[in-house]
Image 1 (cartoon, rainbow, N blue to C red):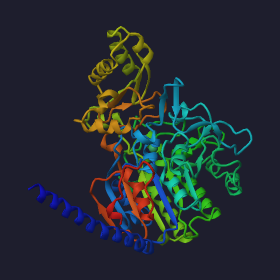
Image 2: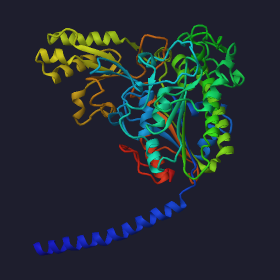
Image 3: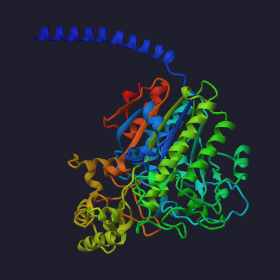
Image 4: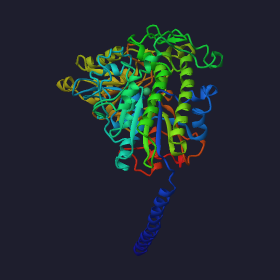
Length: 568
Ligand SMILES: [Zn+2]
């Protein structure tokens, strides 16, 4: 019997060897053949639309022309059911997930802002005092900052240093031995920086000057073409002008969603069309440009200049250009995703994309370009709007949440047990807990339980619970978001359509783990890619590994996603 078993094992082992040899042989053949037949990609154009919830391109389809979204959805492989798997659906988190193919637990970008326990203060994601922004003008006036995350940064320095793992762009730099030209452009610093990775170069729009700027991490001085572009003062060309609807108002689905009492008027920008930008010396002038389709037009124009002057896509070494368009998100934050302003922004963006793709076709050729489109997160409709429709929703006051947690601390004999609360994380005071000799896990659980009872909070998760087998899918999203150093002790999840919000001009939010915030489009269009719509559930962590596989590269160092088979 034993002998039979041994023989069987021997036979199995031999058959394994026999199986393995042709497999290796085939694998070798596959690589050679693949290299010969791999499409001639000269440019990877990665487009990210900030805050483009996936359903918006379906809702506004009738307003689209032929060369933008319609071209991408019709000619490309369009994944209609893609969802982020992390809980804190914010801009830097989504962009870095697209760039690295992994979760915030690995790449470290757990939110636009987190509390730095060691420094005892808030950290803005890509802030780096050692790499200041290179000035574009002498004595520029300072614009009024309305981005709640940017407001938390103390210095003007920016770099990708706090992104903890390699990006696709870093992989391209290594694979092509430094010969691939790599750039990231955006209306927002964090979106440009994340996508350019550690090895590329980033430029972003400044709400102080309307110029596209960079930091000393990337350059010692501006390239001539950038100085020339900025000298044209394109943004100031909108001084005294207004944002008007592109088409006749009767053609819009949301024509009657213009004047709604809960939309934000940016000090004279108004709640209804046309929205006047004001004069260039108005502290909000350059911000209003980005809260309109015009910021995306500036990003387009700057990108064209970059493609021309840096000679992108002109040889067989693929170059990489990431453009992250910020207009949809900025408009959403003040007017909401169900506003006429949102519809017009997406419709105008469609024309901007058509213009970009036509330009790429002329300069590089779409037949040599891999176009990848996605978004960094979705967007929630406002609680006030959802309440009008009959849904129960509201806004949570961060001070009340911290007070409720402190009340539990008192039960344990500790005053002010909360060291800091910045959504979504509550950070507890370690010193006080240690001094009182408390069982930390017990305290965390007691606070989390009390907060889960709070109206508007769906679940408060103690970090200690993240090692448990998840019985609630939300726990998995919180776990994917949890970085051991940067994350707080308790993660607070609001109920659907409730907002954990800052007191400030911004009234509309994303950042929840709910589907309206996780649902984004993913489209791949390029040589050899079939036109199709895929309803299988996929994830943005798959994007970077798919691009890498198309080029025959190893995925970025810590990538967790897998190549999307429909693209091949
Ligand atoms: Zn965003």
